[in-house]
Amino acid sequence: MKNLLTIIVVGSLMQIACANQSSTDLKNVYAVILAGGSGERLWPLSRLQFPKQLLSVEEQKTFLDQAIERVSTFIPTSHIMVNTTRNHAERIGHAVGNRVGDIIIEPGARNTGPAILYCCLRLHQQDPDAVAVFLPADHYISVNAKFVEFLGHAIAYAMHHDRIVLMGLQPKYPATGYGYIEYDPALVSEYNGVVPVKKFHEKPVYDIAQAYVTAGNMLWNAGIFCAKVSVFLNEFKTHAPEMYQGVIKSLDDTDCYHQVVSESVDYAIMEKSEQISVLPADFPWCDIGNVEIFLSLKEQKQSTNRRVITYESHNSLVDVPDRLVALVGVDDLCVVDTGEILLVAKRQEAEKVKMIVQALKDMKAYEYL
Image (cartoon, rainbow, N blue to C red; front, side):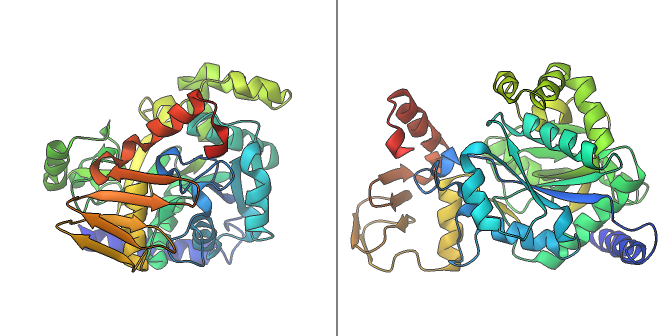
């Protein structure tokens, strides 16, 4: 099936390349990079004044820098947009400079459902024929060429069909931090590589994740998707009418936005709609979902701290600049020191770091957020 996908994807890219030189070019395609998240599971590396999309594992280019570079290879600067919130707008603006055409600033943080709907409404005002590609800013993709090939195929399909196309990654290991997409591999050739989604599955426990990897019909949900903006709007109007009306009102009165239900795009429309397809893809990808994933990736790319001494200790990740760290009789830890905050967490419990963030909010200890 991998060879078949390669043929399909390359063919789609050739179509796009030819279209780019003709009257039916990509003039209506827009890339929207989602950079409004607060990154609570990456605390204390991600803070309110320094969000996760500005972190880096390669010292020079941030995750946001890399996201912009990936899409700028085939989408013009004027059609690249970054979505963020008021809290991050100034810092994001300084970070992106003139490398994007616009920054879409939400009135507040209401999760990915309202964020994507807000962007679609803004895009529809600008270009009623727009096709939008939504990409999170906090992904790490090490081979851009393969990513662009698959994304090109997804865009080509979305341009000619009234469906939302998701990117699904072939699972490499039993990941418990990702949602999964179930599909029928037998339909890949029949549907030119893009097949209807059978079912979405929540983040599984380890044993179930192992079964998903060997099943052959499950994909990691990469959170990357595209469709005509009119299709997005119709699905929101159909499956999330209260959200739709609330965001519509906020275009004229931004205070209304804070009353919109805070819900992910997955719950709002993806898991309810019958117009969802998936492109099985295969390129190196990582969702930087928590501090353990970030430190693991950083350790691969650079030496996080060479001054670590261990005794009867194994498998820990340490990011403590400018001081010696000694570990005795402990295993599987994440140790992070930002100067004013020291975090020590079990690697397998890294998702629960967000509970510390909630506790700080309850304590009104905003200086640590």
